[in-house]
Length: 370
Ligand code: SF4
Image (cartoon, rainbow, N blue to C red):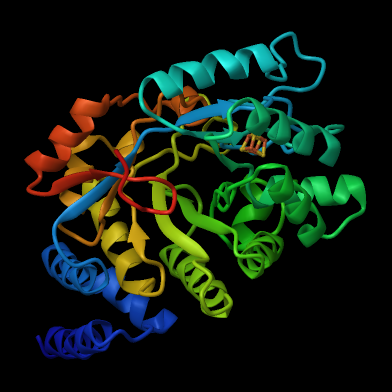
């Protein structure tokens, strides 16, 4: 009983620190994550959400995920999407395919492509810069939320150039914002097992530092629920928070953070190491709340309905999240590993309203549109 009272006293002090805008230490974050009941975690995360994003608006966006190529040399154990260059299923998306997908996206009122792909062994800066500038010439209104730190690091290595050189060239060609793809868990112990040929945690963070120095808006993610510990999840959040603290005054840096659970179906991680996605609704809600609390300097927290389903994402709106993400006209990486939820424009707004919030359609800068 005495130990229980002590824990509650400690959590009371932590709550004061959170609501006054303080940064929790790793120990405090882990204490909270492991000990405080979900309802309390949600209440304090919601109170902080109200300080950071007052009101009851919840954002959503129409964009389309187009994969540039599925050819990849990384071989991440959680990925079913990639193919070797000689595979009969290997592809590099053609301009005609982009045009068809963009026309469909524009017809639905969207104006952004989320462009991602594998780490192709031979496609360098000329290819990506050429692609972006051709897309922008053809569709000047189109926004390109494209690539991610592992691709930037890979292109920089292929070219023998710095991250800032690559980012600058891509931005001049039409890159509008850099997704936080490939973060998984920002711990090299974890990365050396699940994605050992992908960039290290330090490289991922260094690419984001360079992007922020240039004023490029980025986002941050976490793929959890595989081999990482809770302490490593907290470490991931603290690393993001530190990089965000270093951004130049006036830069947005990471505009949002989205955690999603590992999708295990048919992955090598499940087949070879027996790792399964055992994330429960409670696990996800707790992680969203802890993320809100640990990241007071990142403005928006997104609930991933794509991987957790509508009901869980709706609950997250009461526990720190203020964004429902995209209707995702097309998504290929997590959907081939078992995620199967879909929304259209009406459905996503209804889900937000049913949870007690007011939907607003936004762009990648989180400005209201439409
Ligand atoms: S997750 Fe990305 S980097 Fe890893 S194997 Fe799949 S496509 Fe390649």
